[in-house]
Amino acid sequence: MDNKKTLIQETMLTWQNTICEGNTAFENNRYVTADKLYQDCLGHLADIGGFITSNTPPPTSWVVDQFVPALVVSYLNLVDSSMAQGKHEIACDFLIEGYNVVCDCAHCLLSTTQDENHYLFSKHLSQLQHHSFAIRKHLTQSPSLLNKLEEISDPYSVTSMTYH
Image 1 (cartoon, helix red, strand yellow):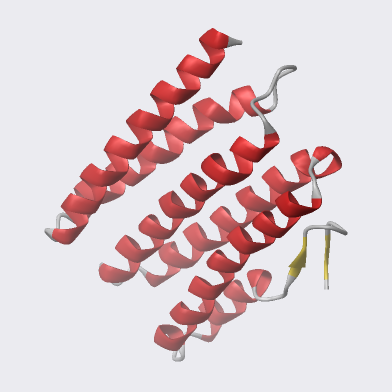
Image 2 (image 1 turned 90 degrees about the vertical axis):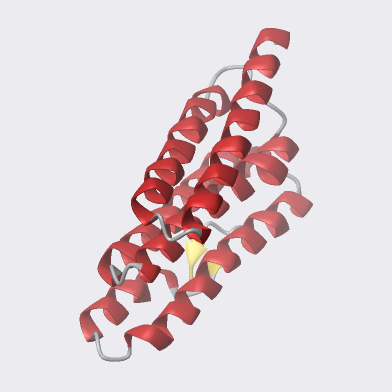
């Protein structure tokens, strides 16, 4: 387990460094570089995802406190970069993908999580939903993209694992 813990810590440190590099590229309008770095971040997190679904996963509280927020940040950075480039459809796709990935993560862990973790999952999902609402203001002339975002506009109940 110590080796796994070390690998996870190293991967999260790599993720953090990569996200900072991506943010610097984004701030300097180097969007292609930023996008590549943000995609690399998702790759780092996918490596950790394998540990989460293993027979000896990291503590659920760590997944909810560290891993899921990293997913949200990575996806939202891709959304923001796509919006800055005028790639609205790609931004919507990333937003929906991020929302679905966090939902899938919640589904995998819900049977073993405590109520406080349910709340945190809901909070992470609401960040993605909030971004969706903010983007809608820019897409009022694109009904097809607005319809696409409807998929994540409904509240998601982590405790019941259903959409309302």
